[in-house]
Image (cartoon, helix red, strand yellow):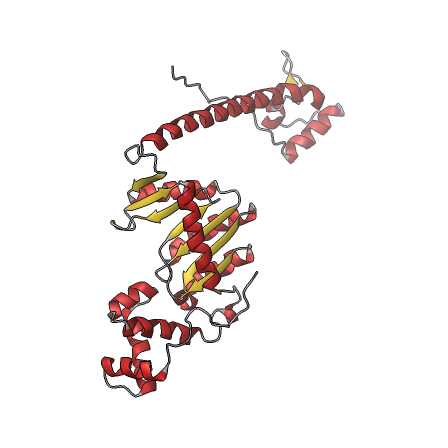
Length: 335
């Protein structure tokens, strides 16, 4: 049977104001002031009013028992309530895991609706104890979202969480993202960038992962992955991308390492030569179609081409794409 207890326990104030302390000192000396007694002394039991109206000071040790015992009792009751809530949530979680997603037991369940996704993700991230891995494709995120994320991520880092994040190269010119990176880097996070990130991914403590459903709008349906084998697979993809990524330092002068622009342009041209449109290239590299067109135009100017087809031919002759896109020796790799 469900039970519900009244939590409206009256807890006396535990603060002693300066005026109250001065009044109590005078009362202990036997020189009660003529002014009205501060309420905090009566609430704390340091002064007791006799039937004839006189006030008598009591030793703090005697008053403490009457004041602290209700507080201790209330804390004990809340601890018992917390333990009971944890047991209840554990039992409910077992049922949810068994039946969510059709009861397949696959370790993958779907969450629909932006609010539900956000609430579930926030709860899981707040419960992280050791490690948080994130991959964020698509360029810079909105400033308001980054400001909110900064507060929660710094709090997690201060708890000792190790955070590693992969962005795309395009964030290196996005001021709000750079401000966020500076904040989390100072707190101990590591941030790197790639030309193309596989997809959005969040992994907490290598126990639970969030990925967008590939057949739905990203903001409306997400998959929560808890299967150990699938988690290992996703972490493996993340680690391989991490090794290829270039570190993004939080010092403003280091946001754009040497050759980054050339590397980004090679990535654009590589996709162009393979027949992708500007819009498709923009979506894959996390930049605008206008930026893609700018890279193509500058390459055309450099090679003296007058058409897209001629540019592809000249690129092939120049050997511009012969270098490995993912091995720019711009910064030393960490072990």
